[in-house]
Image (cartoon, rainbow, N blue to C red; front, top):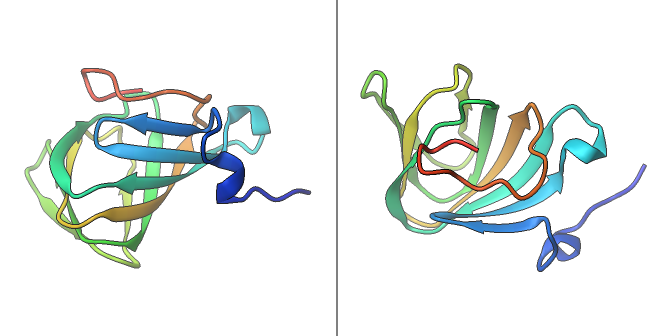
Length: 123
């Protein structure tokens, strides 16, 4: 049993800056939990194209307002506090942050560590 605080992560190898996001990675593959757990901060802007070809992801919105667009169907989902969105089929999508957005993100399989989005949107 142990705890991890945000202060433990800021400025560490688990504080990842990418185009359109900051990811504080509380749990990674090496933590042996079977998933990774992130605090994802998306500053106002976008839309950003992301496509996790090797991971499933679920995100719980803590704060902010955004729009998630399913690029296969064109459907736009409003994202606001207490909304969870689920990318359960390696869904290509865009995310537009209307205001700064804070999410709790869970990835399966777990992220290894310093992955950032490639040009094709994947890790």
